[in-house]
Image (cartoon, rainbow, N blue to C red; front, side):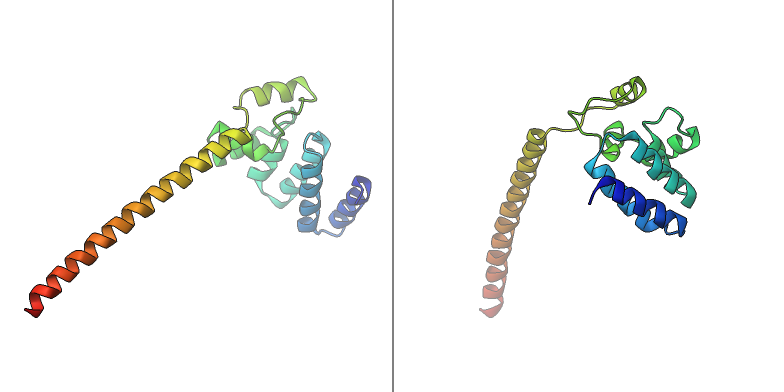
Length: 155
């Protein structure tokens, strides 16, 4: 569906007081157009209307006119700079459209690359395999011990 059609639906939803479908549509639009600051402002406004300061701060974080209370709520909810960067869903290779956005993003670490995520996943799988192997050895030893105890009781 075209961006203009979805924006018309968002306006229609908001006119009826239906904030949930409006938020869903705006999230979809931001996923398709992650660098569109106007979409982010509109989503922040919907969250502001519903009283969700954390999400309003999240989506207005890259807006120079953002409410400091909302920004503080977002920063408290996401204390890690890496967590804030991930929550913003700003593409790693996208050029910031304004100097303010460039400065704000520069304060946060760059998002993890796919290679770094794959390496972390391999390490996680390796650790899980090692745990499973250790558990199997322990179960085997427990079975041998149980067999020895039962054998002594039977004699």
